[in-house]
Image 1 (spheres, rainbow, N blue to C red):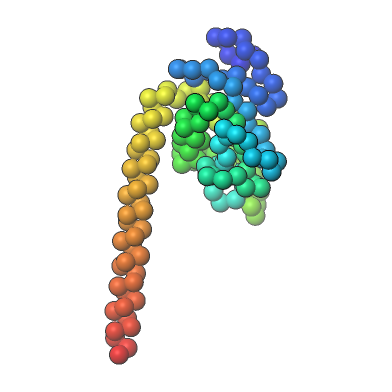
Image 2 (cartoon, one colour; image 1 turned 180 degrees about the vertical axis):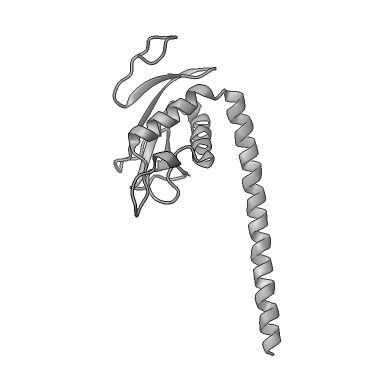
Length: 156
């Protein structure tokens, strides 16, 4: 059963999901090399496990959803990555990874509890922080170049 509200079906990798505002079908699967239309891709292994990708790669999961929900799904996946909620589920001693079952469980749990308003608000806040981080990185690069220039000036 999907939930007490609808009595919807739950298949092995297709799940009818309810959140506060809508009901949609979400399918989370291992990327097999074929690009899926209306999908969000997340990294499945490595240092940035769970990170939302702009393009699929061999080590990713595909979250396929209706086109209208792409931005919300991408936002929830990003919240899951940034929050660090996946870290307890990491496996592997050399290259960390999260199993598809654990990723699916955590993503769907988050999808059910977050309201669309909270997702939108958090997405705006994370975007603002990311833009500020880019600005600071540029400033740090300039400071590093200045430091190098001062050191070279001392050699002349």
